[in-house]
Structures are given as C-alpha cells and as structure tokens.
Length: 188
Image (cartoon, rainbow, N blue to C red):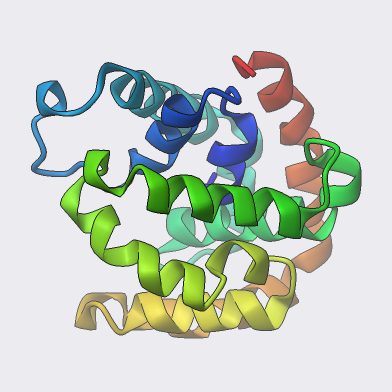
C-alpha cells in the first residue's frame, strides 16, 4: 500500500495518522526523536506493509508485472489508484478531496514534528495534489515519472502506467480481494 491507503487505514488521531504517512520518510531518522504518537503511526505503517507484502494476493499482483524490477513499488502505487478511484465506496465517508485537504492541513500544521524528508516533500505534495491525483491513471503516470527521475536505477518506473493499463482488470481484482482484510485489521 502507498500513502493514501496508509492514511485511510490510520486512526483519526492527527499525529498517529501523520505517523502512518511518515513510515516512508524515516530512513536514517532516530524514532526516539519523533513524537510518540507519530512513532505509533510509523509502527502501524510498518505492520500494514508487513501484512501486505506477505499476502498471497500481493504476490499475485507482483507476478502480473514481471519481469519489471520495481513490481513491488508499482503494486503499492496501483493499489492506491484503485482506492482513490473507488473512494466514494471505500473511503471514510467524506469526498476524497475533503480527506486529502485535511491531510495537507495536518501536514502543514504539524510540520515541525515531521521527519526532514517529509517536511521537504509537503509543499510540492500539496501544490501538485499527489494524493488526489491517484484517482486517474494519468495521475499515476505523472507520479511514477516523478519517482523515476529520483534515480537512474528507477528509470523503469516512468513506464509503470503502461503496466497498470495492461493488467488493469487483474490488479483491480487483486486489490478488491485484499482491501477488506486490511480494513478489518486496521486500528481506525
């Protein structure tokens, strides 16, 4: 799961929710230096990742994308696409734009408590509305192209939307099989 799913599965407690997003931004950060509620969210993020990574449905989704080297990353992003696309059914009862605006506001109001990498990402994330852009395949394409520019080794990600289009139905079915289990396990 990628950021939108982690935020959706998190409890409504603001710092715990933000901690669920911070999970991908704490490499090299001493967790003891973070607010305890953020650490709780990071731990929840990691628990979700362990569950998803070990699940047979996720392994099936990754096999659909072979021989792509970054299949695991792509599946995480693609699952967020399906969640965003079907937010009216799978979200928290509010429109996706309202949910994401609240997340951006939380990020800005608690910026001093966030890991430095996330602090740097927030202005661009909000300006380009990364979370809402998951809803459209073109948005996924833009996200993957941005990710691919961060590393020459990740150049393959830039063409990831083609893999989504080619495997759309199967990946959608996989997400639909996995999501109810995640919701049932979530602390929210």
